[in-house]
Amino acid sequence: MIPYILEWGSLLLRWLHVIAAMAWIGSSFFFMHLDASLRAAADIPAGKGGVGWQVHGGGFYEMRKYLVAPDFMPEELTWHKWQAYTTWISGFFLLVWIYYAQASLYLVNPDVLPLTGLQASAVGIGALAGGWVIYDQLCKSSLGKNETVLGLIGLVIIVAASYGFTLVFSGRGTLIHVGALMATWMAGNVFMIIIPNQRKVVASLMAGEAPDPALGKQAKQRSTHNNYLTLPAVLLMLSNHYPVLYANPAVIPPIVFLITISGALLRHFYNVRHSDHDKSPWWVWAVVAVALWLTFWIAMASSPTGRAQLGLSEAPAAVSTAAAQPHQQPPPAKVVEIVTSRCAMCHAAEPVWDGIQIAPKAVLLDTPAHIARQAEAIKLQAVVSRAMPPNNITDMTVDERLALADWLRRATN
Ligand code: HEC
Image (cartoon, rainbow, N blue to C red; front, side, top):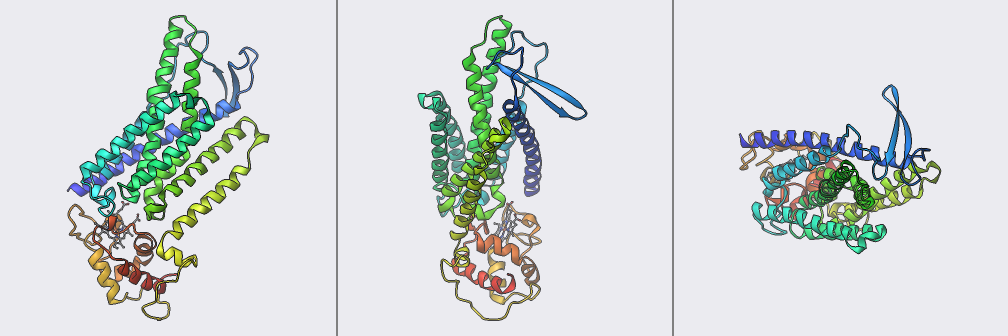
């Protein structure tokens, strides 16, 4: 019963999380674009806002921005905050649901650090809270006045955190926590700075006073940070589906570095382009292409089989020189033995592993025919990466992985 509830809870939470994030990021992109495309308006003093025209859904919109605020209090005011709050809250529950409640599968790797689920969760939550305090104080400090310096320090913190997490968590747990750290900064910016500042502005307007321009400036700074963090954060949230990214914890910090600068640069391209089409910084695409290529290369070179394919090391000696076999050929007895003893306790019609009641992702590895059918998936999960068994929970040896690699080389391409 419990595994079904865990699976359903995960599905429903993820559904909510993705929808809320779409709404948040969508409105965030919209307002960044709007800000960049505003043009001077006759009735708004220079530097105090502007106007932008848009066409959508059967009509034309005239958007006016008043910086910091108009002279009057509008009768109706739409606030943009629940998208951010819902995203963070559902994301946090998802983190608890998957990584903290099922820590032995997803978060704790005893080879890294034999923590209990509770200890690992405490480290995770502590890191998110501590990470927010450090970031927030930095923004408010004198260093925060220089955007470039602040951005570089932020990057250093992100990469350092990713390294720190690799000393405590599984690779997969590491990447999700780096993503969660960024997301916590983003949601914290909305909850602790942007919305409270807007409330103060509204209070001044109601009192008939001129609002403090510093409030608007601070909110804009944090909103810009959010914008640059969006793309890397989303990629890190998706990373858990891609074992190639987290298979080798030693290379996670450089991978996080490259992903973060790639995502931030891509946003930069659009921020500049939306304010002045002719100044589009096309060089960004070249840098991002190189960075992503490097990421691919680092990930591949850190896997023993990947290294062999790059020609960096000898391919593991073949056990037999038999010609390539089609998938449907039954795998050798040795392979069947390895897979049934290391994988089938979970991946069977009736799993015997405590806490698993249905074969995960419907992947069955309990008969020679099933194993042959899953050849490609086995290659990806247990040979190219070491995502399976989760945290090597069933103690699969390197020799066994090499034996699978040898079979797979003949069974697949
Ligand atoms: C302790 C239980 C357990 C063992 C042992 C185990 N797995 Fe898994 N496997 C899982 C779980 C849980 C998932 C779902 C992971 C997720 O949700 O991302 C999974 C997912 C998979 C997937 C699907 C991945 C995807 O996202 O499409 C494959 C393929 C796989 N395992 C292969 C293997 C192989 C090969 C082995 C043995 C080398 C193995 N597993 C051993 C629990 C296990």
